[in-house]
Structure formats: C-alpha cells, structure tokens
Image 1 (cartoon, rainbow, N blue to C red):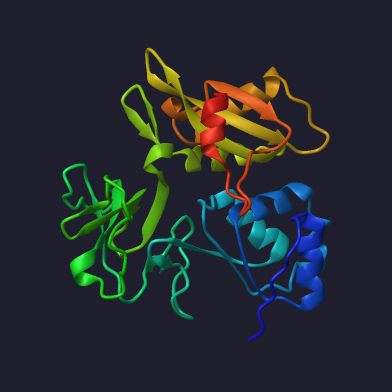
Image 2 (cartoon, rainbow, N blue to C red):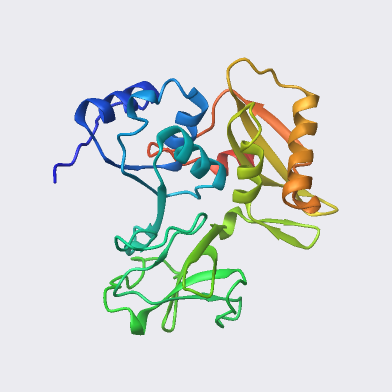
Length: 284
C-alpha cells in the first residue's frame, strides 16, 4: 500500500488538494488539522467528501463535535489512537475490521500491552473512575522503556510505568483520554479536564479553535480560562463570552464554565500541530 507524505507548511487548501490529487483513502492527522478544516467551511472539503474511508487521529483529544463534523462533511468516521514516544502507539479504536469505534475513546490496548488506571497510591481504580494511565511492565512483553538517561525523577515505580496521562476505562476495556496530568484544572475541589469544555464551546458556530487552561486563583486554586480563535465574520465581545459560558453550564456542568475568555488571532502550536498549553498558561 503506497503512503503519501506531504513536506510543506500546513494549509487547509493544500491538505485537501493532496488528499484529492493522490486519492488518499486513509488519512492520519492531528486533531488540530481537523478543527481547522471544519472552521474553513463545508465548501472547502467538498472535493474529498466521499473519498476518505477512515481518519486516524492522535496526539490530542478528539472531541465529539469534530467526530460529528467529519461524519457529516466528509462522510467518514474518525478513529482515535493513543501512545507515547517511550512505547509507540499502543491503544487503538480500530484493531480489527469489526472493532467497535466508540466516540471519545482512544480504544483498547494493542496486543503485547497491559494497562491499568491507578490512583495516587498506585492502586487500580474501578471502571469509570479517573486516574493515571500505567503500563504493567511485568505483563507487557512489547514494552521496552527502562527510564530516562541521567534523570533523577523516573516515571517507573516497581512494575508500573506511569504515563502522566489521566484516563478512565469502561467495563469493556475501552480507554478515554481526559488530559495530561499537568493540563488538568483544579477548581474549588473539582478536577476538570479541558477536553469536554473545549468540545462544548466548539459547538458554537463562531468558534474555529478553542483551548482551555487553568489560571491561578486565590479562592478556587484555579479558574477555567478559555482561549478562542473565531471564524471569519465574527467579532469578539461580551455576548459571545456569555454564550460560551451558558453552553458549558447547560451541557456540561456549572463548575466547569470558563470564568474568563480571551480571543486570539491564532493558537500557539508545536510543528506537529499540538496546542502549546504551557504558552497559554503563561498568558493566563
């Protein structure tokens, strides 16, 4: 099977052109690319609307709004995957032709890996409870990582390798990415993952991109702050801020709404397209 690699700066137009011209059917990309394609409008993606068979995405959470958009605009499902440099891509939402694709899940463990979700005392938590994703090294024959060279603090504790990612698992062994431990927001005793808030705000027609971080606060430890890039034709203002806050209150939870919203021309990103949340935290 031929593989197409495009070496050039990202634009929505160039991405659509390469997919259309080379007849790509399996599209592997970052969620940021999909968000920008959605923000560009339906006419831009018409040339590939029924060409793609499957989209694989990873590196960040893919929220339900992007999944809904892909099914409507591209007539194509999105299958999430998860992994790390230390061990490769190790959970998939498409391990086989009959593998069920559960929206919001990064899938089940690939053969050769055994995972557990642990609490702060390194004890496995029940299904549905959030905790740190860990690899059982003793039962994972394909896990090869032994630690970082010349680094004092190691993520390995006995048989556990702690990934630093917060997840939960359902009763069928599907894992759900909540966020990096550093990205979780602690506000008035609640631990809040940014992904669900971002997905909720993204449903507003004005929003091209959104990222949520915690801003230090004396009373609540942190407050939720949202950074928004608007679609063309929309102007920043208090009415939009109120609309985003109300969306989160109604669809998610009252404690999770963004108490502050800032509008940006563009998001700070890595070369691979991941949002640089540490930059946003400094800005907040």
